[in-house]
View: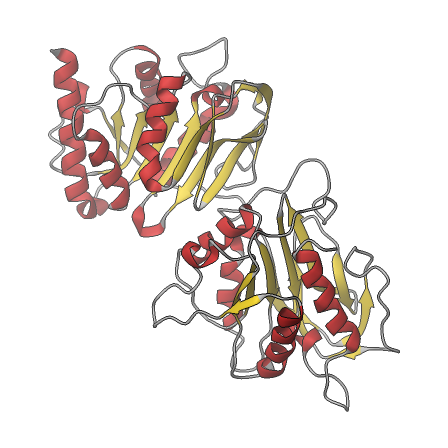
Length: 462
């Protein structure tokens, strides 16, 4: 009877929480402990409640406090992959996220728990896969929630977490055993494998390296306090070994369609666009240029699902919140990206939207590069290339990319770069390099060659 009553209270709290969520702003955010009232899960909840004692939160246990749950909805629900839930609670938990709520979700250590987690998260496009229990070193992935954390040590991974818009948090073996998802107005979630959370010696409270991480995760999911303080959210992590600069061979993409977003209006975009489209056609790619209405997302997972290449130009001041997630999803699945920043007087603010699209790839461009002489940097793309005598270009974009050297420099500033992570590849070329130069008003032959070779490298033939 106690268990049934407790579960009913949890379900009631969540139902009211979903309905009342928008009214929760005036008081301290509520964290709802939707956890079993016995065993390891309860011990974890008791520890977490104590750890959150100094934070600007209200922690509620509906089954213990008898809370009515009608005054204020939870900003975050902390829950577990429970084997038994009352009818309707799973839908209510999903509705909590879809209505803008946050969640910290622990995946239990046995197969039944993973199956429950997979069934719960599947409709939200989150994948929970069996890891097979290998023992391996767990590593933090750069993210605000992991910034400055001490080493985790070895874990016996139970599951890997992946999905659309994933921001990995902890890597172990061949996958990620903790991850964050930020769906904007559709809510936030942190999902963590219990194997990462607890050590073998203490099953009642998280291992020391994980304690501050869990507190930060609750604050982040509840959108309360200062959970950040590190690098920007949502970047695929650079590898800890091996080369990230095109060192590994890749297969050609399954599809030959290129989704292209290039401006046609101001500055020198018409000339740059003409050069790029000509080289795409030469490479045998099918060109698709989607058009959408104002306020609609142009770059979506549906459009990229059967694309081999995404071509982005700095064409918009604002992008929709889900477009950077789509770009990151495409790249993480082995997609290839050609990004071309270019702007001038009257269009400089378009660089904001361009950089937003690339936030998940940890790449950015700024209009800080002066004009000057062009130089080549050794790379598979530039190998054997020859420059014209004393080639010069106007000032333009400077490219910032992690773990890589540039392809082209202008006055020692990076103007083009290539980056590879797994099967994903991206080349960023300052549009000024592809624009007409000199008295004859034509693109430098060497820069057209750079573009051609970049496309070959992106598509796996170099």
